[in-house]
Length: 222
Length: 230
Ligand SMILES: Nc1ncnc2c1ncn2[C@@H]1O[C@H](COP(=O)(O)OP(=O)(O)OP(=O)(O)O)[C@@H](O)[C@H]1O
Ligand SMILES: [Mg+2]
Image (cartoon, rainbow over the protein chains, first blue to last red):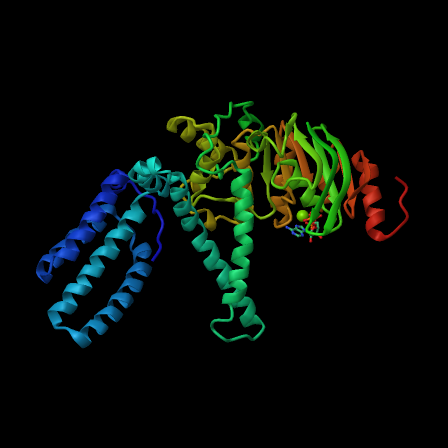
């Protein structure tokens, strides 16, 4: 259920990223503590209200909602075997709340803002020698490359189908090989684009003075 | 200027480049040669992505083995596959990523990103996920993301291989308009007709190093198995 930023200018979009993350953490904890399904329903209604406020388009919502409904239904069915109707309701609404709230945050927050606030949140760890900038870079890379890898998987499956291969999992081996090779290429790109991949103990990269302004030379190309 | 001084390179036991001595100072330099002859290896040596097995490579006097961060900021590298070169999830963020080493104020970063998005016709895609761009747009983004960092030299390793004719022309046009030194590895020979110098590699050796016309003629004969005259 990885969704990405949807352009918009609602109050939810303008709300600072750290506040949304904090609210998400709060909602996540609160719904885990609450045991009564009417109260949980009230929380869910609040979250749906936030969706309305954010004006997230329906066509963008639907694939996530569909996946969520299936997921929650499976969990609810399992719960049904062991628990009462009330338990099923509590667990289902809890899950729905968390998934919907998390999706709303990713939809209404730019990754750069999200990553910047995560940077701030984990910054105290630098004192323990943790490279927190790598932490946020890793998140950004994951968000960037999950769709690319998914696309690769789809292409491999298509190529196999075109050659009559039908076994469902045979695409995994070529996909893993492709992904590893891709990681090599991305590593090169990171290095050549100046990502600081040196060990923690080295001093920071010196500021690179601007040498020439090239914008003029490129402006006919748009 | 990039200088290669008795440079050889091997991967494991396999020699790929043999004793190259080159001073690369012309504005536009092309590199051609058959598949596997060592063009990409040469290109990667020039920005320190790989280090020579023997000999030395220097950029403006900075040895790639000793001063890699200076070399990186001087030399930009555009890869064949933009999908691997775009690192951040959205178009605007990817351009901003290139400015990180410059440590500029946020407003200045936003301003420059906007300028470059406009220059490359990507302004309406600023907040779009990079994976939704077309192949041509991805390559434009990859190039803009290198140029925004203002390198003194830009190396292109087959920048047009994955593109259709219109996008090929567009990229060629951009490369030809650049003020800084460009080194282009390519199989598109027409790309190089207005270049200042073309180097022909064959099995890890420079077999011709000349103006485009004679060098490309040499390469064509070589590729067709006819006797060389260069
Ligand atoms: N990382 C590596 N490990 C081992 N061998 C490699 C590696 N990279 C390249 N080679 C080998 O070195 C030789 C030269 O490779 P290089 O990529 O420089 O060729 P190229 O001229 O760029 O070819 P192409 O036109 O296909 O891009 C090839 O035979 C290749 O198989
Ligand atoms: Mg190559």
